[in-house]
Length: 408
Image (cartoon, rainbow, N blue to C red):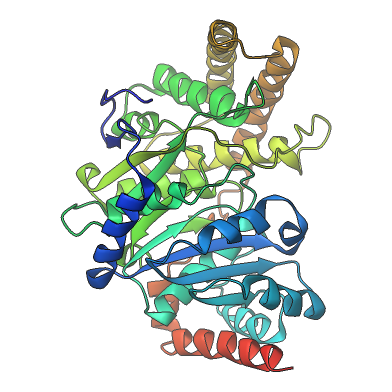
């Protein structure tokens, strides 16, 4: 059971009473009459063959308050797209699968590339961006939730809690971030959040001073959670990174576009576990190593927009401060694990800290050496300004794919 303590500058909504799911879903059903709801699922085709996604689909069948499910399908051939239509066909809600490698959506991407408006790299950010564009194109929802497809401990109560704050007409929240304890199988997980993001935020406060933006990021209990929800009008002006900086980028955009009293976080699960990324000690182009570089760059870029000036000496100071703070956190988590009878490998924890400290310097070097880098995918309002009928094109392409292959 969570506590009721409010810390930071955003509202925290706790799990205090173990409220029955049926009761909450009945409320959501009533809310849906005024504020229709959608769910976005960014998915790799390989996840259809894993253990998590089939269970997620089974759970989602009971979420009758959902009016639409939008699935972004990456890395799928024609046969695999056809299989995906069958796989997601079990959903009773209206749903569409965006075949991102299909010729129709590739043609739209090529048009956007010609005008410098398309995502520059493959990945979750690109997938989410197209799904959000389709949510605008379909016009079927006013409240939208998004969560990953690799949650092996998934229960549909997670979705109900996640979307409730933005679906409730009497609440004024535009955005809600999910949080949870990353504890499963007797271990404390979530290394990047625990050992990179939080100590890096604290190190930045020490080296460049207190800033409202850093206090804001520090208010989130799990800033890298892939689960969030928002009202439809948020999408129009949202600029997100296409790399692993997606979650930090979204939080940064919310801080820029809305007052903090319009933002909240909510406890959505007692137990949460998903597919774990490899640390990738010898490869900074993959796994948690690349993730740590992308996340650090996202934070440095945002701070630069607030007027913070970085140089090599600054990054050396940040790295040194981070390293000491992160090692102290290792001791803190060791004690937390021990009192709860959990496992925590000190060697692995400190190896991660050493890698992340190196990658903070790499992120700093890349930030300094690529001053003309375009870090964000353009907002959909800009895309529509350049191509006024883009939503019609997107909707027609998805519908044409759906009809052609479903009727074969």
